[in-house]
Image (tube, rainbow, N blue to C red; front, side):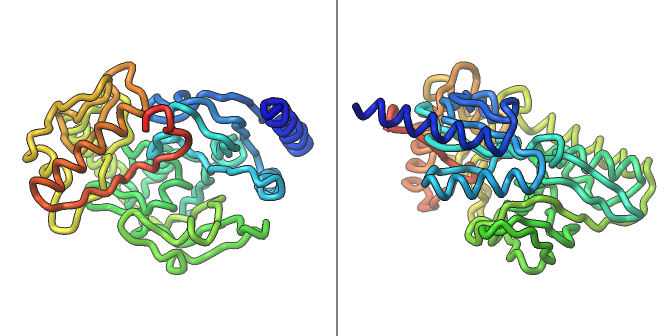
Length: 316
């Protein structure tokens, strides 16, 4: 009887989603291994791909009304979904309507679903400098704003001027970057319940040859030092104050340490990789072991940079 009730609830939710979105925009039982850069994760009850703010607002309002959890999904580059999946709605922001990029003089405006690398490429093509650091970051503009993404001495807060968001009340508002409390891999966006729709980036005129040289140099450094040939979520742990996570993990003797198909990268100990066939449970077990060993040996608490979401009960 309980299963019948769950099926009835899911059918009603699916029907209501289809009143807001087209059938092509709604998927049920969608494997999250297809939507995360770790290439792991069980099925989400629903995955929806809105194309404009009105559809997005309608979906989120419905989720709140039906008390169904939801998660705003970009490229899945900083996300670990449990093997048991996600009991709720994954809201995929990478639809065409949220991927637009426009260049006006020295400003780049990019939708939340646009890849950060695509925005950097558009800047280069317009001979604009300031976004070179972002060329190899495998995330979307929306996720980059939420996390204040950065690499090689650059951070989004250095070029971000305005962000257009959807508020929990369903209103579209444009905020100055200074209102977002941007810090190291953090902002106030999640706690305020905002959803990023678009970002404005202020760059400067530059020499296209020099911009290309810097981007190529950073790409070469990434290829040399990072395990780009394996699925991962980038840097797995936040940088502890006064330390480097990768160095601590290496000094703890964990280079190459494995749990099933999950491994501490031999190339860069700050990366946990999926060497092939890893489960999310194995990745989490490895991360817990790393945290325990670093704490025991050096007294340092490593905080995961990767967001954990969904049902891990099969492993825990």
